Length: 125
Image (cartoon, rainbow, N blue to C red; front, side):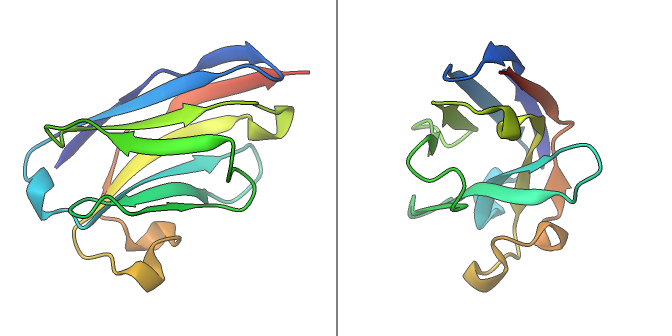
């Protein structure tokens, strides 16, 4: 599975960005597709995830109600719509695919086998 993330940038607080993650390869075998982020000096943290077959979605408490994870009908691209952005959302955002991830592992970055290259999101105050 190859993942290509894009869509990051610089935005003012309160603004919006939409991240995309184009997947190729054996995507049908991925049980979960998720977004993580890592700010300088901090650990990589779970942001949002989607069960690839059923479309069920999961969110970190800090982004629930502001971010939305979705996919296209061809199941080749996963999106992260980010609204009401805050300076604390500043980080490098990574998409990840987990063929072997089960729901209890969803929020653990170590459970994911495939990662995109990351895209920088900077929110100014």
